[in-house]
Image 1 (tube, helix red, strand yellow):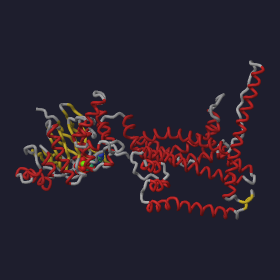
Image 2: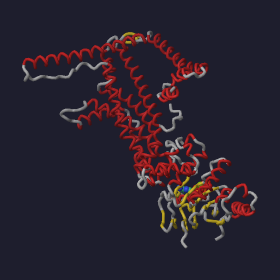
Image 3: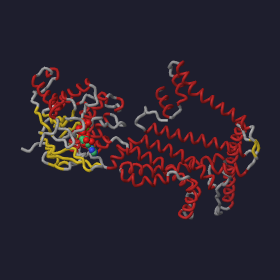
Length: 340
Length: 263
Ligand SMILES: Nc1ncnc2c1ncn2[C@@H]1O[C@H](COP(=O)(O)OP(=O)(O)OP(=O)(O)O)[C@@H](O)[C@H]1O
Ligand SMILES: [Mg+2]
């Protein structure tokens, strides 16, 4: 049981807790305690030092919006933002209750009365914006992966195809999302016309921009992974007369999974960064818009609220990377490999 | 009479920057059913190339390979290959590695139970049943090579091709595997082509030793028939005059007569 717990902690990257689990499992506490100090103690010290410099450093910087906020003010805003979110949710439930009540009354008076059901449209809170951003990045990243992995596999298997598309990849890879954005916006407005759109245009624009920027690392890593497969493994497939798709599924994909995931992790990281920038520039809903709105708003709390957003962006980026790492470890055959 | 496997006047050119490079020139080997043939020669002379042509992985530029009266020019399970570096799929257990081969070759003709039995049977043949659920990374080099042999045997090949199957192993492990291979060979009477660098291994295992001249444009130097009675015991053979004669023949070839015979 304990072994399983430790395996789970290691695979999810929660290495910090491994020594605790080991002490609980009856392993010599002395050595594990040292490990604990190394894994938790040192980062803790660094964290405290950071907070210390932030606190005293920020106090010395005066901006047009007042003093640069320190950790205390930022923490205040975390609470405020959360309260705002709760309040908004409350308003939403109240709204729907009133509407239901009203409609019920109408129907009671006249069973044939026409009733109106309207959606609540309150202001999206910070937390709403987080979910919007997460969903957008997920969709963009998923689209990118669905395109990049198959192309990567096919071009990794065929040197000619790789040579053919390599210049294109090299040219598009360094393009900044901000350069893509106007083009994507115009194309989406032109092409995505429907009376009852399932997704808003701004969402599509953001997702496609994310996709365009997060295609390349996955594509390149997949192609490199596939082209460096042990020739003998492919020869075994030939001797067994496996078809193209069987070869891909049984040999190519499993052996290049580690490289594919390395690419996916980089892609997701880039996608997340790109998304925030795109949302800011295009005023598309999400965390980027939140930051931009606060900046325009320019109240005395704005800087603190932006810092909350910065920290949230960082923490979410970190969490996304951990999730990918966990998936990578889970799907890789070589569990002993030290994947960071 | 037509021989079982006929490597018929095979030559091969590899394209290089300086024009075609003739690696093999007019290689001619006849092999009977059930015969164990070793190919020996200096490094880089073209042994693997011969094997890859028989295996269908390379195409001969001239000549061809005829198996049971039919020309073969693409890879197939009738010519199973044991690779020098085992080439096991690292994400599959030993059992699954063998099973994949069995399923690909017999998936249409045998039912699940038969596939399972045949997989286990071949693991048993190489004495690896105990490790069937381990991953290749969890077993020793010798064990991996056993699984590689089991996988090849499981295809019921007409010809078993082995490219320095024991080259990467230490002497003791190698001796064990040679003994296992002789046992299996006595049982199944496969037709085998094995590449080796090891003179003792060649004499101990083979019915016929093919000695290749140095490249480029390597060819067959001599073919030595080894008529030692089977089963062969390595300890008894150490003092056997015939054995030592064969051994010295091969050594003499490798050290004196390896150059291409004057045309
Ligand atoms: N695909 C290829 N393209 C070009 N040249 C090749 C190719 N394969 C082999 N050669 C050349 O053919 C010659 C024979 O190579 P081969 O691998 O068959 O030698 P070998 O006898 O198996 O050597 P070793 O004992 O080191 O394994 C070498 O000179 C090699 O450089
Ligand atoms: Mg070789």
